[in-house]
Length: 184
Image (tube, rainbow, N blue to C red; front, side):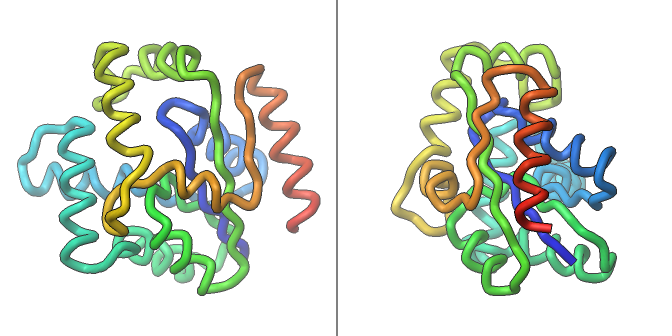
């Protein structure tokens, strides 16, 4: 069983990598975002990035920096299939998953204006924001000294493979395929 974690900047194409791995390679997908949205709905909180941010930080503060990804890892092990855990945002999540073995971290990044264009086109529940809000959200999640809070910059530095997604889906898929040939 292979576990691929996916991290990256907002709107960079993490979901596009997931799409390729699930549709073309048969991976099973576990999403931190979906886990948090389920809990947000259960609690009756507004479905937005602020709720996701605060809930994730609350769960990490109460249960440890890798709580959510550890929950998803447990489900992945039960599946006995190659799996993706998407939207890794703290170094603690990475260290926990690496300690479990057969784990690789993919990071996805792209030009900031292109990423904003992508999120406005995908129209998810957390993407109805201005460019200034997009930049504020990114800054808030990019770096911190608190191990229980989002630190995308540190996660990207920890990646085994970094994908620059400034071109076409096909170019991204080709880059992912080359990496899969190395690790599978």
